[in-house]
Image (cartoon, rainbow, N blue to C red; front, side):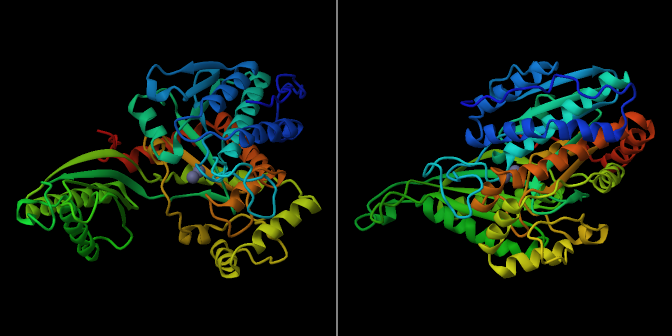
Length: 478
Ligand SMILES: [Zn+2]
Ligand SMILES: [Zn+2]
């Protein structure tokens, strides 16, 4: 990192013998500027998936300075992953942090228009600068509570790389990186305040490579066997199959190699597929049929094909007990008030979107106050049950390992989607950082609740056991 933020977080500033939940909130508020500085430092030094060397190192250093013990993993694939631990005994609560950026989405933080810091450079358009910092804020508050109260319990900050490739936590799960944790809390920047009860689509990622026989397309086509024909016929098979799968499933593909020139029968051709569906079991079943289509394409064209399982992930396994704990903490905590400048930025970003997009999201969230470009309420349970989260995330895999909760807070104006210049702009400004602070408080409040009420964990675990009975986690990786 180029910029270092002075750290005073290790200096105790709340000396209550028995901290209450409101003291934890005060503690986070007292460290707001430092947390904003950390989020901004990550924002200004964006690193894409697999390359988060400095971001991971920055968090390791911060946590170490704050009295956490750092644990790294021996696998080369996990060189930018780690966990930092404080406390003794159970429950062991994981706060999941991410810090990877997106290629090509460089954006000046706080700008009212699309403006790259550097054309073509990466940027934090998914707000993972806020994501990692939120978990860090919650983790230091949780540590503070354990120290002051003398209660039994452990907090772990998990540095999770490669989320944008939907693979980091899947690899971490494969190598048992989450062993020893009792439950996990997570946050994602969003355009609304949502204790998420369910969502994200399970996914498989596959690459197919076909091999045929090359020949002159005019002089000797009868001697050729086109690998591109195989790709096209396989795709056609998949496209007619769409009518006969569940309507909530999604299949997307691209052709990554379609040959060299029209006058050469392509010896090699390749395609890249994603299969998504609300439940992993459906993804697995549809994947088998997609592979059958490729077999058919190869058979019809006298070619051969190879198949690479390039990963996959699970949907979120709901945990109503933890979701209710999250909702209660949303209600107990307050969002920080916005300055006039922040409100102006929010309005400008909102005005840059198609009005229908904003109106639709207002309706989805159930937020009628059109004077505010930022969502200031909490989504109702009823609106949540209809709210569609149809991307995929590797956090789904963690939810199948232990009781899990994810919260979204309004870091972006209503209607702003992830992976856009607008989400990047807000993530690099106090507008987004205030939403992050709200999330840190909620996660710290949830930690307080589970430490002080053993019944929450027992019930959350019972719900987890019941939901996974006969359907345990199977790594999507080969
Ligand atoms: Zn993303
Ligand atoms: Zn993200």
